[in-house]
Image (cartoon, rainbow, N blue to C red; front, side):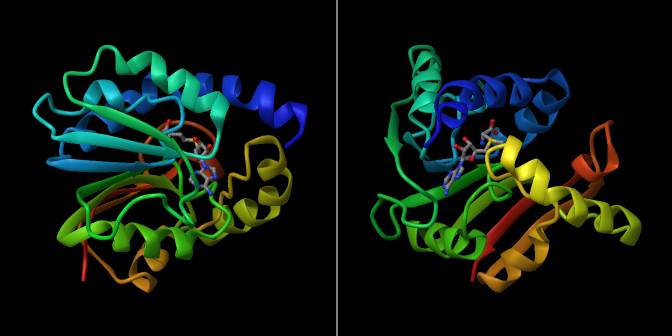
Length: 205
Ligand SMILES: C[S@@+](CC[C@H](N)C(=O)[O-])C[C@H]1O[C@@H](n2cnc3c(N)ncnc32)[C@H](O)[C@@H]1O
């Protein structure tokens, strides 16, 4: 990992992901989590303030030590136990079927292998466990999607491997997730290649 990824990127991600326009999306979605929760790509812990107080535990996994150390600053304020672990979505360092809920917000865009990550999340969820997600990805409009594909090779170098053009709904289906709720569209204001979102919940099975 180079100096940009180690020193600059965690600050940029924390700052970009802390934008107020994302907070409303986080609050509604993260508040749905219940029981024992696995958050994949927890980043700087920006979802932690929005979990319900009565959770059993949140286990947060992320490959970036810089982001995990920022997440640690939120833990003191949590009313439930939080465990932070370094790891990757493609090989989650957790037991089989140990979680009631998995949470993934703006993470599927950045993992190396989105399908392997979703299969790992399925492994970690108990039967009938629920995945709660907010992800940006491939737009419905062909013209926007072509721009997303053109921009992604440059964007991912600056933005921690973030891909603009991943078809989140198709990836969920390919990994065996069944959407229970799915809202798609430009859910926030901003440049169209960056703002097409998929927000919802899905069951494994
Ligand atoms: C755009 S940030 C979003 C962070 C956080 N989920 C949020 O909502 O603020 C993308 C996150 O994915 C993490 N990430 C990158 N590659 C990953 C992988 N292979 N497995 C799990 N997380 C990964 C990054 O370290 C970063 O925390």
